[in-house]
Length: 165
Image (tube, rainbow, N blue to C red; front, side, top):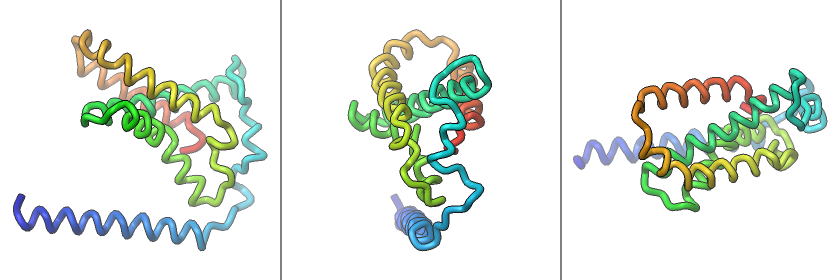
């Protein structure tokens, strides 16, 4: 690599670290819980069981989205050569990281996956399942563009259904 590329990587790393530090400081010193934000005591408005009511269907879509996010994280980690533990960690971070950071910045306590551990269980289960099953599926895929389009569609639907995003 050239000196200019090395310098640009260092500047990008410094910018990312600065942005994260500023966000964490703002969240720590400036987070004021607002009355109109969902609080843990109001999470029960969406039922915790999957049934055929509108709330139950939304809960199903939310759980499905959590699994899809974990799946996407494991695929990315696996294609980069990570081992089992790395893939499971990346899958869980992908599945729950955005909602965790949003809740932290907004001052929600506890984080959503501590109050509702189903999200953690789904993330771990989907990550482990994907790690072991994906190599078998990957050998049998003939139309990769259709698979990619389907995954992008599922990802978009999952973002729309996730109340923690």
